[in-house]
Image (cartoon, rainbow, N blue to C red; front, side):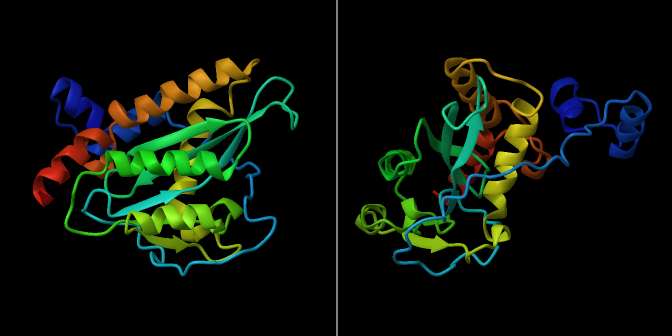
Length: 229
């Protein structure tokens, strides 16, 4: 419905659009699919941070609430030797993926690399940022915690074994894998990484969302920044 309005300036009731899509077998059927998830919380346990979000994922302020996690993608023979890890940082105001890294191993240094890109992208604002994650060993590390403190950023963590506490990030991974990954077998690492980068660019700059009033994450972020400037 939003696409018809945005592209063709057609104002049509969403129920009619749904009915026509159903009649022509155009409804998505694979969004209920579930798959195993890389669990970064398995391993040595260090210092935890309290849960500051409490599943309150809605905000009208850009760069106020940011969520992150790590997910695994496989290619080739789909063995443990044929996989890469995506570590994105998502802004809860616009849904934009502010930064990300795609690496062979989910090491703390790569997570921090993406975190620093978030700090570079964030303009000077009157309010503090909160970065929320699960209890992965990368986010418990002293290096990661020091990087947050250095930039005066709050740290927040999900409760252990409670995926709903980071549902906003889990939802992004699920959407990405449904649209990019589940129905396609990538033969090589370069093929997979290229597809991942192109999809994230599409997600940020061209994929409109009804939740964002028919705008893309980048468009919505720019409008929101004007309001808080």
